[in-house]
Image (cartoon, rainbow, N blue to C red; front, side, top):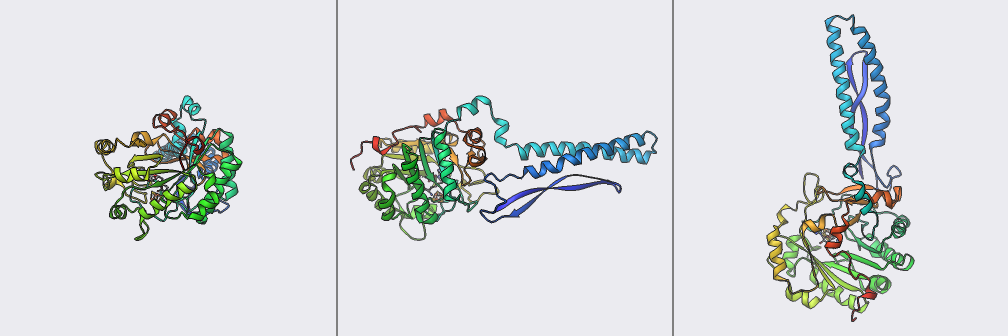
Amino acid sequence: MFLHRYVAGQCHVQPSTSFVFVVSKQKVNYPAGHPALPHTPHPAVAFLRLRQPSRSRLNSRSLKMLLSSVVAPPKLLLQFCISTLCSVWSSILSKILFWTVTVSPAVSRLDPSEAQAASTPTSVNYHFTRKCNYKCGFCFHTAKTSFVLPLDEAKRGLRLLKESGMEKINFSGGEPFLHDRGEFLGELVQFCKQDLQLPSVSIVSNGSMIREKWFQKYGEHLDILAISCDSFDEATNQLIGRAQGRKSHLDNLYRIRKWCQEYKVAFKINSVINTFNVDEDMMENISQLNPVRWKVFQCLLIDGENAGEKALREAEKFVISEQQFRDFLDRHNSISCLVPESNEKMRNSYLILDEYMRFLDCREGRKDPSKSILDVGVKEAICFSGFDEKMFLMRGGKYVWSKADMKLEW
Ligand SMILES: C[S@@+](CC[C@H](N)C(=O)[O-])C[C@H]1O[C@@H](n2cnc3c(N)ncnc32)[C@H](O)[C@@H]1O
Ligand code: SF4
């Protein structure tokens, strides 16, 4: 895994005067799980330690030069001016770096009332892995690391969340059934239902790795399984990248629908509306599959994930307009379980935990991480989640989410 380490450089004003003020950035390669990696990787501490002594050295040197300059010839005066300018510039530079590096952008935006409002993690989405076997071109949670927490640490974090008021957990990714062939996920599902007694435990998956054995072992502990399907045309799925090789995404979908019925798990569908499926009519298939909920998302861009220079995906060509999204919704408005999510509704209305159990703040159109709840606790980390509880309620985030309360006919 790559981390950026900040180191001090040297500035030479004249042969006898040098001081530390340049900060450079090195890319360091750590393997996943390396002891140098905290749950909250952060480079700023090293920078601060280096900054302090250099500043006092700088001031005493400047003072000496000032005294001598009273009687100095013009050449020395010029050197003094250069030195002073350098000193002022270094101070400005270090202040800028301090605020951009040490203070998360989310911190400076935080208003105390917001911090209060976001203090209960009622419904949490834990993306414990970023790895995936599909290549959806619009994907906004990409394989930037291959890190997964050890099982015990993940359980510790989930317990902290429960103690802070969590009622619903949703496991996502990456593809959550990929890590340890679904065993890691199964263990967490069982732990959340049996040990933590959470009212709702759900998963969102592409469905390609789910086997009947998994339902036999863990199905009873799972309330809702959401399978993502963006098209009922295999060729379109291939174009989107929602496929592994030539394997049929739709065969999996229908097989899983049947298992959900047999093993008493509520079945849900997620669809991302994009340029490739915006004109499709999904009425017949959705009616046939009869999910408890059909989430229909407008394709969203997230800087650093599926847009911008450092992104692993380029999703611009998938983006549709508000009007196109409304037209799709209008065409499907007779489907009563449809829950639409425009870009606006989606952005801040999810509490997202990444693979290090850091909350991700999406307010600025990118995913800014907090510190890990494993390092600082839920109360501190959640202040930097950017979570908008009003929007969460507006998008229908709170619904009947325990299968026991759904009154389903199995
Ligand atoms: C990131 S995926 C992870 C879970 C699993 N791999 C899957 O595809 O269902 C979680 C959900 O986000 C949706 N999603 C991915 N990229 C999106 C985007 N750019 N805009 C809106 N939803 C997106 C997926 O379709 C899926 O329903
Ligand atoms: S949206 Fe597609 S690429 Fe992204 S995690 Fe899910 S299946 Fe994988």
